[in-house]
Length: 208
Image (cartoon, rainbow, N blue to C red):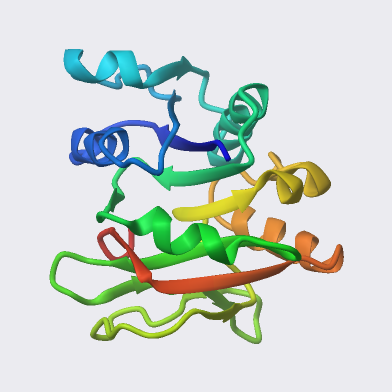
């Protein structure tokens, strides 16, 4: 089983180094790619051997992620995690997520929790007008068992390679925002399901 992680970077991520260090020291992670669309990614010298940096013109979040997915596919990854550059996974985050991505479950996301212990996102829901909102936003984080999820957030999620292959990844017409909503809904129409796993925690500021 090969697990690859794709981190997308534009500009100004103040925790990028923490994000990358958390990944390269995680025993469940086999390969890490940083897709840099801002041309300003700074990767510490000691991390360079463990991080593949892919320079790309800024065509949007979905396009950057898709380049990372192709990189992972070329390396034979069965699972591909996607992270924002300002997300910092806690230890064992993947260990908790990976068992949930099985069969018709094509994606699982962690709990995104801010530094003050409040939930940033436990997934996405749409209001009657079609606007997306983060589930649990601003609520105190409480451990809970895994549960089904209608829409995952693209800020931190693990996909099966089979899911990415069947859906084709993100629709690049969405430059920023709602590319995750679109992908989740297209996948659901193909029979895929999703899970949120609160035992897996990724630190991420609310509203970013």
